[in-house]
Image 1 (cartoon, rainbow, N blue to C red):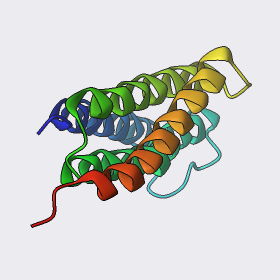
Image 2: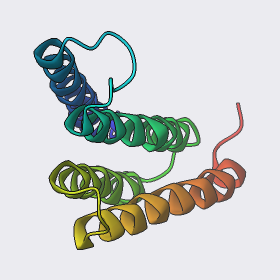
Image 3: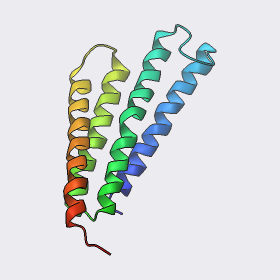
Image 4: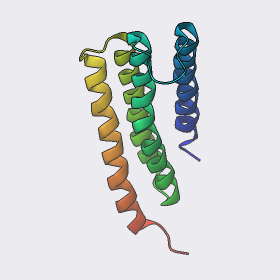
Length: 130
C-alpha cells in the first residue's frame, strides 16, 4: 500500500494536535470550548482545520489505491497533502493572522485533493475489471 506513509504521518499529527489541545485545556481548566482563552481557541482551530481536510485527502489516497493508480501518482497526491497540512498547522500555530505558511498550506492541500479526485475518476476507467 503506497499511501501508508501518509496515513502514518497524518495519524501521528492528529495525535500531536490533540495532545496540544488537551494540555491547554488542563492548564486553563477548560472542559468544553475555549473558555475565552485565546491560546486554546487557536490550538483548537489548528486541530479542527487539520481534521477538516486530512481525512478527505486520506480517503482519496485510499481510493487511488483501490483503482490501481500508479505509485508515482499516489505520491504526487500524498506529498502535497502532507506538506500542505504541515505548513498550514505551523502557520496557524504561530499566528491567527494570515501567513505564507497558511496560504501555501491551503494551496497544497487543495491541489492534492483536486488532483487525487480527478485521478480517482481517470484511473477508475483504466483499472482492470474483475
